[in-house]
Length: 111
Length: 107
Image 1 (cartoon, helix red, strand yellow):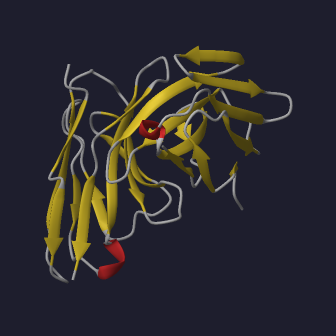
Image 2 (tube, rainbow over the protein chains, first blue to last red; image 1 turned 120 degrees about the vertical axis):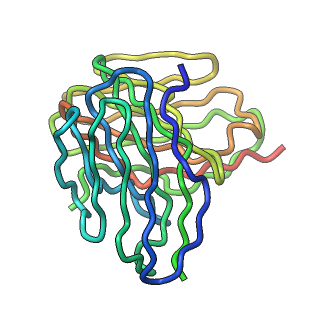
């Protein structure tokens, strides 16, 4: 099993550009999460999904969108990039027993 | 309001020292996770525990549910233990995250 796979690892965007961060898991987990990590702050929940076709907002959803058309994939879309979205993004998925698996992270810079 | 408080925020130790990182939380939990993040790296799960104590190599994690407190201990610390350690209690499928303890172990 590859676990949770995130791409890209690094990306630089200009203000107003759009992009999608990809997240895939091959463990057949129902739950998937997108977090952002800013310096000196704990991970903040952007969006989460409890299964295919179901998504919901987390603590900091503004400026982002998600979809969950399959159990495996949970992409995060930034529509109009802003400097405030400069951050490190992590996708995560807990197993039914609660063990938490993270992707390797995506470092996004918006200039 | 911080549901999770970790201490210390930063810690520097000499190689071989015994290290303790503390975590206090305010929410009722089903389990608590200790995570490790190396500089510029991803996040890996070290422990998931809901009671008592777990040991993995030189790492020991304890939790006191009544006191809402957990500790992570590292025995015989080594420079490769240098990382950020994050406490993450969860209530069902909602996870809370501390801001992390940055550990530097000097040879």
